[in-house]
Every structure is written in structure tokens, then in C-alpha cells.
Length: 93
Ligand code: HEM
Image (cartoon, rainbow, N blue to C red; front, side, top):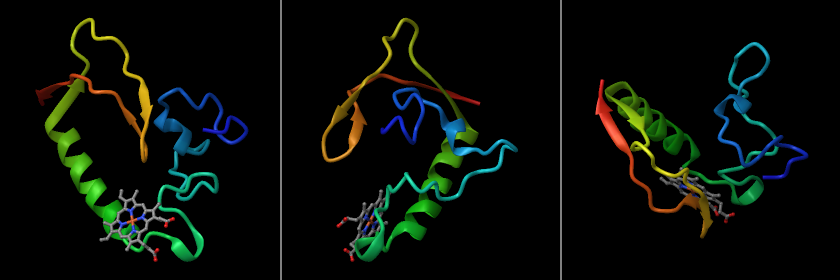
């Protein structure tokens, strides 16, 4: 969330992970969801494969939309930064 590394950190912007040519920046040095060094997550490879299968299957099958008039969701700090409870419409493609 440090704006020195992530401009406009509160904005949802998946394109921040792409370079100028549209290629995925594989490991931005200021993004460490699996930590680093001696305590780095040993499940990272498995987790990345599972996340890819899980989300690509969902996004192939459904279009996700906020319900009409729903307020924008905000984050809440816990063990990780997550959303407050929210409603979502999953529309079959
Ligand atoms: C999205 C999924 C995951 C995330 C974000 C994640 C994140 C992390 C992070 C940040 C740490 C370091 C904790 C620390 O600093 O002590 C860690 C450690 C660890 N993770 Fe994961 N993890 C994920 C999935 C998995 C999976 C699927 C496995 C096993 C199949 C796994 C096994 C472990 C183990 C055993 C450690 C301890 C490593 C050590 O201290 O030597 N994780 N994980």
C-alpha cells in the first residue's frame, strides 16, 4: 500500500501488474504475498496453480457484477486485508 511503490494504492487496478507492452510483471519486488527469504511460503507454486484454475474457471463461466445501486465495498484489516461482507451477482455467460 506504499504509494512510493504503488501509485494510487487504494484504487483497484489489476493493470498495475502489466508492463508497458502488456506483459505480466512476474515478481514485482514490492509485492510479497508469499513472503520471502528463509520463511518464504513453500506452497506458493501449488497456490498459484490452484488460484489460476479457480479464478479462470469462474471467470469463464460467469460475469460478476455488483447489484444495482450497491455501494462500493471497502476493505477491513484482519490477518489480511479483506472486504466487508458484500453482495455480488454471478451471471452465467
Ligand atoms: C494464496 C495462498 C497462500 C498464501 C497467500 C500464502 C502465504 C504465506 C506466507 C506469507 C508465508 C510466510 C509466513 C511467515 O512469514 O512466517 C507462508 C508460509 C508457509 N506456507 Fe503459505 N501461502 C499460501 C498457500 C500455501 C499452501 C497451498 C501451502 C501448502 C500446500 C502453504 C504452506 C506454507 C508453509 C508450510 C509455510 C511455512 C514455511 C516456513 O516457515 O518454513 N501455503 N505462506
